[in-house]
Length: 484
View (spheres, rainbow, N blue to C red):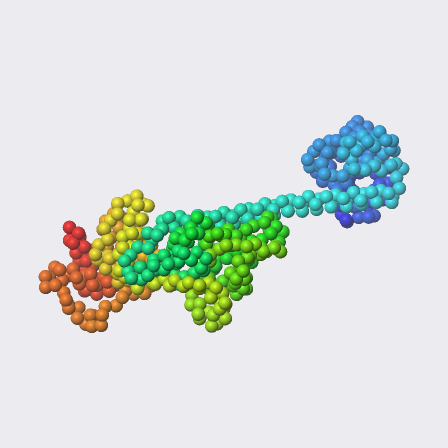
């Protein structure tokens, strides 16, 4: 390679001139030294690609120089070729023991010098490339192992978090007394003896579909086996098949070991596929195959593995509409919807709002280690008038925030932050007759009007005061008066 540096170490200038005359026309950069100290200093500073070293020199001989070069980390890898008239066996062995890679006998032939130097330069380049490549591979293996460990940890953390959430809500998460809730509990009980039946749960986001899936699992003979929750939206497209069905070592870049997929991990238990409506069509076909024959083939594998898994899927999408558009397979739908559970929105379970609010108040007060404050009738009335676009999840978040903001005092409407749809509207004509049904007692009537205004304004005291045409301080005073 043009520009490679060669250090010639010889106490005879004539020998240096002869070697330089052979090498310089080939494009090599020539460095020279006439004694040991000079050679060691130049080698450490310039890092030549090859050193041609004379054995017999005044003072320190070539063998000692070679040993010092090999002892120093900065020059250890530089190939050293002895150039000497001493080519007896003892001298050769001594040179190799010192770390030299070759010998060139004096008087030398130009072609021999060029061939030997080019050979050792090529070996050095290949060695350097091999070392660099090994370092890259070790770093890549480290990154892959770290990524694999992180993925396993994330999967385990996902399962752990879901288990913690179940412990937090458990079956007690089904708090309420509505007819719709009783219907859901009845359906879960009905599924107990049908542990192999796949279930599809539909409903808006936040209605508790995963809680129902867990209840189905925990109330079945599969309860002692794993429950593996998977969010289909969060599955990376390029890893989807591997995550679901597993892979064999070497099946793709980064597959350093065999890995079980979620189906195998859930063997004997339940695989919960949330947001199934967002599963890519190509993956739907593979999912259908597993549901039909109960076997998975890992990526890169050739032998199917039989699994015993109940699939509980959930979606907030209109799968009928998606089937009509061709984005969701009809045959997969009927495989999943062997039994259908429809989760009603919270706004259709108004009688459950109060019990749920009290349940969450108890839950968060216990977690925060604070006394549980009362939920005032005004606050409950506001909650029951709200449409709850976020359903039970929204109610849960509202109660947690209200508990923090109330600082131990009774929870009032102004402690809530309502989002989304406006509160339910009063019956027709109610706005036109605001005084209808009001008590004749002035103080009680004022109390009722304030409550009504807060309901109309979703708990916003500023807006309620504007609606009533009074200063907001009057509403605050009324609260304090009521509490006392």
